[in-house]
Image (tube, rainbow over all chains, first blue to last red; front, side, top):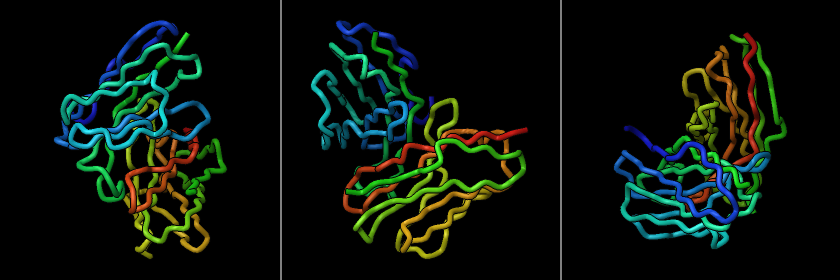
Length: 116
Length: 114
């Protein structure tokens, strides 16, 4: 595997379910990100991790719970989601945080989440 | 607050022709970067080109070039000799050199007509 991978690619879940999204980067980077991409809206940054430490939580509801066990893996745990949480969830990684113009972010293909 | 606006939700261009995608932004910063990202149907967002605000020379990457007008806060993307593989959503984006956030526009869907 190369670059940034995400599993699953598609997920359908009920509002009472608990599921997790997984992201893995094979680039030797230290920073990882979760973004939410909703239809007709700009990409929104959710969480940032640098060296496994969370450095940013962009006012995300607690029903989204990130976990970064090491610099290569990032999870997003989901529970009691709402239909409006249906979106494409993108993971990205970069060598370091700060100055995206200097530290390019590399994106995964995303998980298409549908909440029923 | 910084904002990025893409006024063209969709565009079409004939294969081998040239197309220009528009983007305007708003910021009070002087030190920042601007980007164009491409998101094909595979959904993987790819950086196409970046421009540092301090550089007056417009960035180019093969068939992709930008027209950066700093005073007008305009950052358009020109795609020359359009190819079928250029069909995608294109996002204009901004980041200040003072933090790690990228602010994205809503995107322009580009169709390539054979």
